[in-house]
Every structure is written in structure tokens, then in C-alpha cells.
Length: 303
Length: 89
Image (cartoon, rainbow over all chains, first blue to last red; front, side):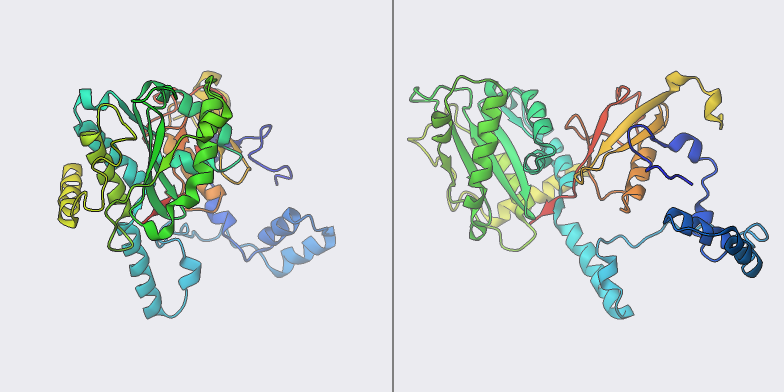
């Protein structure tokens, strides 16, 4: 019986020696005295020897007598299993709904995979001025425990040597695209002043709610790289939210972000200038058919 | 494969830590020539989650789970970050 908590630094979980004879069936075995005693012991309840003896007599352990099959590892692939243990028919419906919803919405793994594919399809000289951050990083940055780690990862991307940095954001179950422009440029120059673009295909959801987080994020990036810019200058970097085509249902925003990336990389100006803003980023930048075509192409290239 | 860990020389072992978002890191002793997937599945089981619910990152990057610690270039004491499933619309 492990009294100490397993998995801490002094007592690592030893997969190697526990794997070959994993007593999976024993831990699931809930009827005999052995298990009762183990349970009480684990709860640190006191049991007298007499009591154990009684258990032994009244509930003999038949575990070794006949073989039992291991509990199946198969589980229903949905998150809310506990919620949908209702009637049979409704639970089936629920399951269908959940799997369907999961299929249509892009999760970060699938998104990264598609983005990798997309990135490979761009030509080298197009890509040269760009870099992108993993979609999980922004979300991780918002958590105090992993903040410092994310900043060291970003440091390795050398974003101050790039013209544009694409930051896909997945927060509150919604995808957005943040683009950091000209972060290496100086604040005095007229042609290459730093600015930020936030493309959101669901304006209703108020993209400005990201502003405090984005400001902190950018401030920390500057700090982590030991840049000479002062706090005031950094806080004055304009954050622009251009009007872009809007999604038609609750499942498209991941695809929108991918399409934004595709179009932006292809059409980004040599020098992003605030005077010419918003360039191509307009309400009728692309049509719904364009997006459908793009998604089809993306999905077919994957298979 | 040798079953008793005492008979395997030490260089075949690696200590890894998986840090989740719950501030409760788990430390693992693992073999260098086993697929990392095994470790990740164990982690998910310990956390009462299904394998596939957490995206895992090494140094901020995703990695193929069928690689071994050696192939991934992991060193003793290296850290794997378990994040939350993130999806959206």
C-alpha cells in the first residue's frame, strides 16, 4: 500500500516495472475482504486484527479461483458522458450531437495540422517575413503557471526579426487571429510602425474583450526580449480590428482563421502602413463560396 | 524484454515530469526506447481523463506520440506540458 503520494519528485511513477503485471483486474475487484481491507487502509481507517479475521471468514476471496476478464478499455468518446446517462434514446441522440459537434468544430490539434499543411504550401520567399505561434500558447500564457514558459518559447521564434507574426488565438471556445506587424520596426519611422491587427469572424462576440490580455502579452514579449522601448510606447501600439467577413454558423471560425492566414500571407503588403489601412481587409474581402472552396482544398490535401 | 528493472542498466531509464494546468505535476520513470504514448496514456489515466483530451507540448512544440524519448531528444528531468483541449467556433 503506498502511503506516500505517488508521482511526486521523490517517488516517480514507475511505468516500467508496473506495466508487465498490471493488476488491473485486482483494482477493479470490489467484493472480497482483500479489497475491503485495502480500501480501509487507503482511507487510513483503523481496523483491528479481529475485524480482518471476520472479513476473511464472512467474505472469502475467490479471485484466484476463476479467471475474470479485464474490464474493457472501450469508452464512449464524448466528454459529457456523466451528463447524458439519461434514457437510452436521448443518450444516443446526445452522443450523436456531441460527436457531430466535435467533428465540425476545429480543435487545436486538427487546426495545427491543417496550418502546417497550409504553411508548407506557401512559397519560401513569401514565408520569409512571416512566422506563426502555436495556437495554444496564447491560452497558456493567460495561466499564471505557464506564463514564463510561454515567453521563453516565444523568444526562440525571433519575432522581432519578422515583419508579421501570426498568432492564432483559441479562447472561450472561439478562434481569432492576431497579427503583430513590424514589431522590429522603430516607433519613429513613418513606414514601418508596429501595430496589431485582430481579425474576428464573429464581431458580435466583441473582439475588444481580448485587448487587456493582448496588451499584457505584448508588453511581456518586449520585456522578455530586453527591448529598449518604453512602457508608454508599447502601450500606444495601435490595436486595429478591421471589419472582415462574418461567419454564418457556430462552426466556421476555425476555418475562417485558416483562410485569413492564407489570404493575409498571400496579399500582405511589403511595408504595412497605417495610412493605407485597412488594405484588403474589408467587409467583402471574400465570399462564402471562396471559403468553402478553400476548406475543400485544405481537407482534400490532407487525405 | 527484460521484466525486472534491476537487470536493465541505468542509461535505459529517463525521468520525466508531466505538468498539467492543475499545478499537480506527475513524475515518471520511463524507458528511453519505449513509445512516449505509453507514458501519456498513464498520465491521462492518473488524471481520470481519456487519452486525447490533453494536447501535450515539449518545449512548446507538439510531437508525434509514437516516438521514443531518445528519438525526441529528451534529457533526464525534461518536462512535458499538458494543456487543455481547446476548440472553438
